[in-house]
Amino acid sequence: MSRPIPTKEIIEVTSVFLEVNYPHLFGEEVAPLAIGIYEELCTRHPELVDAFEYYLSKHTRSSKYHRAVWNDGEPRMRVSLDQEETTEITPAEMRLSGIVLAGRGVKSDKLKALMQEVNQKKRQKADNRKREMELQKQQKQQFMLLGSEIKRLAKKGLDAAEIKKKTGTTLSERAIAKFVASQ
Image 1 (cartoon, rainbow, N blue to C red):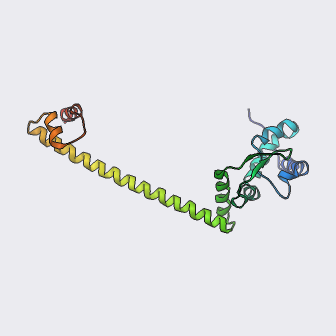
Image 2 (cartoon, rainbow, N blue to C red):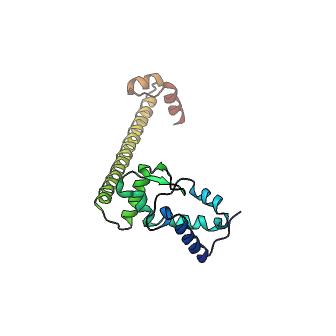
Image 3 (tube, one colour):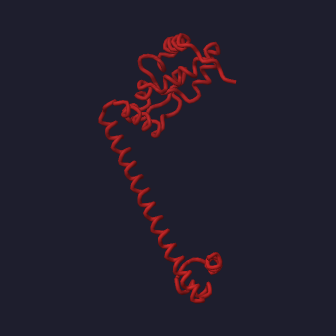
């Protein structure tokens, strides 16, 4: 069952409530949120459950939050409601926040280096994909040539064992015989 969508006013009240009660997470300076913080907030403040999901979704997509996670590429811990450090932000989470910030036009030398690395990996991936497609094309051509050669030898009356020996293929005699029979 879905929850009612909170009004703008309820979300604003929720924002003020969180800034006042948890300034270390939602104040001027924000910190990466501990895993499970939504459930913890709902348990402690059931009267605001309907607004938490919307507010946290907005908060964790903000540039301010992404800056906290990116942390200029340096490791950082997630923080609980009780100001306890919990788990470390993963390198993948840091990179993703860095990419988001760079996409939003945030400038820094470390973000520039990150984007150069990301773009280099994209180019490598595209090059690998191109090489793989070329290899597949070559393999298809080789199979077509092999098929033509098998057909030609079969028309001469050679059996599967003789065709295997003459072509040097790694196909089994059974596979050759099935191929010849299907033609």
